[in-house]
Image (tube, rainbow, N blue to C red; front, side, top):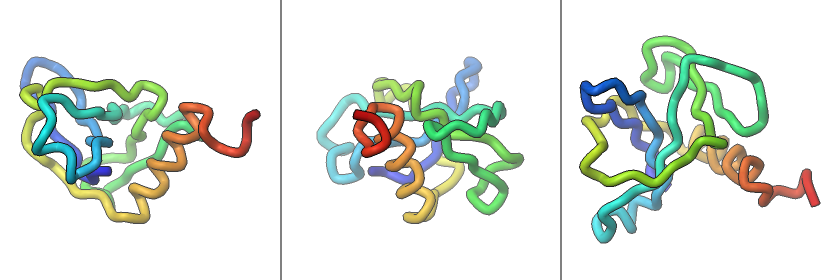
Length: 104
């Protein structure tokens, strides 16, 4: 998975984490992203980011709302997440899709 956080175009959209595998991005016109929101709910389907991750304030990656968008909608990169943080995102994504061991 990519670990980049992109800035949205100026028309209102929020930042998002690119979830599509880095090696696939060059071959695709779309990518899957998870929005970043200032609302932190403390649920297993989100990952909290903070200043250490390059964010201006604490926020959360919401994996329940992952969507596929055209690469043309992506703005400039504003941060690069660590591999540890990306592992947390993978865990939260598995939970949100029901692909973890917590649920039959």
